[in-house]
Length: 223
Picture (cartoon, rainbow, N blue to C red):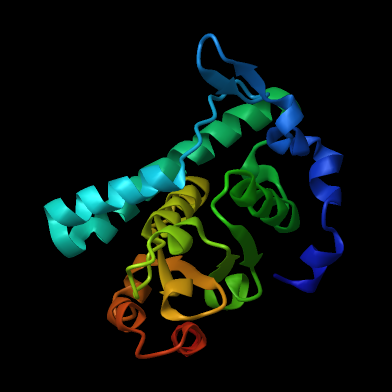
């Protein structure tokens, strides 16, 4: 995260009144209907650790190592849906779309969205976005890393897919997102990089087997 982002913590969403998306008191609970609705009239669905673990075991039993790719594809579709929902909700509540926000405002919006949904504590680094076409994300307390304890490889493929889908919808570009370091590999946080998809082809194997550190992999994209 850049210094400019840090100094404005909490102020951006309050100014735009977008913190209403993430205020639990603003959610509408209907226990008779079995629904939770946010102020933008989008249904909120919570996934428990048991559900995540059950999906993982089912996919791994049926597809072997392809479980990760399947979850990433699901995440990409989910991320695009999330972006469309946010556009609709923000237009409804504030007559502004995510693409209309400044980089600082958008970063804070994304950083607030992830922990509000229990995925983990996300930080967005746009330092190299203009100069090298790279966006770096770090995430602590990853849901997938905490649940999939038997794995020693990157496990946040669905999160990578969500980030990929979100930015594809936002930019219209052919982007990909790769997890280049994971808490399951012994790192203090999970690290992702987003860029044009062809740039990540040669990094996937090194990220999977941990032969290079997240920083080494990231810096190799700047050469």
